[in-house]
Image (cartoon, rainbow, N blue to C red):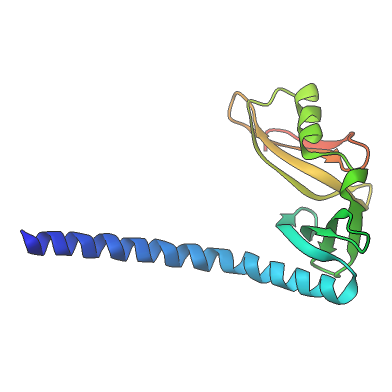
Length: 161
């Protein structure tokens, strides 16, 4: 009986160890991208206190972070993965996340909002900071809705993705 208990504990511990290993391996590329973005921003800007790192993959990939400028104001920063161009916007100059979600609810009937993140929407060959809202409708279709970060207006929607 004791051998069975020891064997069961060993199997459970091995399973937990395997899951931890898989998790660490899967988050490594994100951590590496964050370190690369922060290093670039430290070299090229006066920004400090980096947080809320996100990877955004749209027409082009961007690293998106929150930081503080030299006046200690909260800013969002977009870094193009391709050409390393940096765009900075004051948090206070843009639409808040909850306002962007309200825009979706005013225009559509989402059953469930799955994710909301900052990204870059390409409109008429121009990249514009935008909130990307992924939501599900009653028939389980996934939809994307893009809200302009500066104006709060709908930029575009992708229905039934």
